[in-house]
Length: 289
Image (cartoon, rainbow, N blue to C red; front, side, top):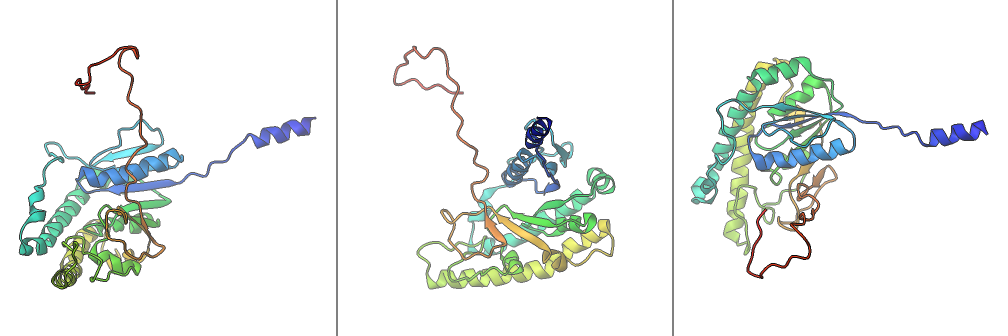
């Protein structure tokens, strides 16, 4: 009888193998960080211990997480980008990459130079996994070197031109649009040529200017022994992409690249009932919450 009770007790015991995960969203854009926040909350709900580095800390009252706030006093991080720059002339669209480089250089330099990040690097770790952005810079892959942990990359846009080849991803310019180009139906020969040339230009610009800028900044804070970004990138285990074939052009993918478009959409919650259900309202009345 006693052995039966012991077996019943053991069947009621559960073992939870949780991991200590560092999630980095060091881009000061609310829409970008929403993807990282959703990933973090999902991991927390699975009982993993999350450390979240972001300009927009998680506000949900979940116990198993630590938010590291990157915001600086006196700075505004909302509504500070004029979207008109993405609808300009062809020349302006080609040179958007220069704006991307400026953002990447400024953010990496600013983040790594703050007391918050320096304190975090000196006092935190180890981590079992790092979730890092792969958008406009690879400088945050330096955390892989610091904490000796595997990395899952996240692109909050579609796959950037300079990221595709690092995962063996086909990026045929005849039908796969450059993220910063305008390859829309009807796909004419001229648009395909423009898409091809812009892709080549952006890839060369990234490899020859943006990578060297990022490596210079990272070595200042992580040491001269930091491996080249090219070596770090090829050690990224997986890339999660905020993309979906329903609203982007379908493209062939490799197993290491997973589309997660729409992950930020939560389950529908019913609106709270207002007043008595027996009350009747005129058809032209609108109730705002």
